[in-house]
Image (cartoon, rainbow, N blue to C red; front, side, top):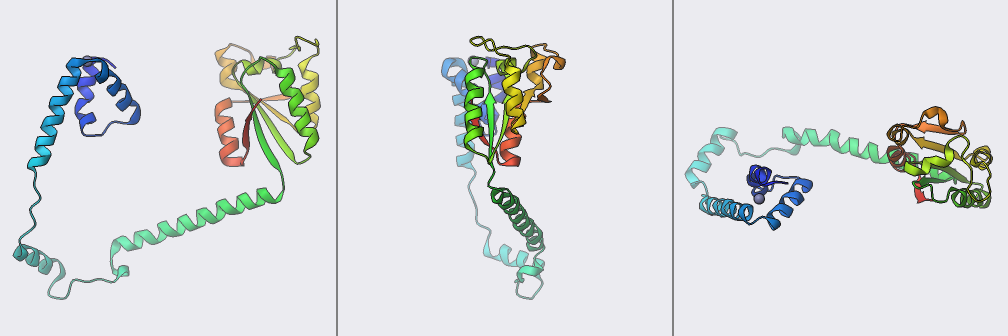
Length: 232
Ligand SMILES: [Zn+2]
């Protein structure tokens, strides 16, 4: 953040109206810039002086009574909760909260009853996909209730491209992927990564499917489908 922007945001900062990112950027600038620090200090002093000057004056008893009489008439100014308009708003809000909680817990119970273990594996690097696939095969082997989704992203998409081979064994990765696919493992490739690296979607092997964003898919699986995150 530069001096001009810092001065622009200084008042909002003093009034604690900035979001976290802007606050941090501004504080970083203040720490490094004496001029802006002095400007900020002056603003802060003005604010403190103004706040101190605004006192709270309790309303005189007579004024209070007059207002109460006008608002409530001569009758005692008390209302049951159902006579107060704001209380009615709270009822549907509370009911909605109850329903939302019940439905969320039902979908969780339905899922838990299947005994299925849902894991989303994130492959972010192309360092060692052969090891990743071997670990995954072992996991599938040891747990018949495993539902696994592999989300490949960044350099991690390389092994899912047609013709990609394990550098050590010379084996086509597609063969191991096809075996895992036959056991119910899903492979999903990040569309953003392909676009960024100018890789044609046609280069992705048919065992894998394309999702618009790998990161969004990982988030969605965890939040909406109760998947647990693991990095391979
Ligand atoms: Zn500055």
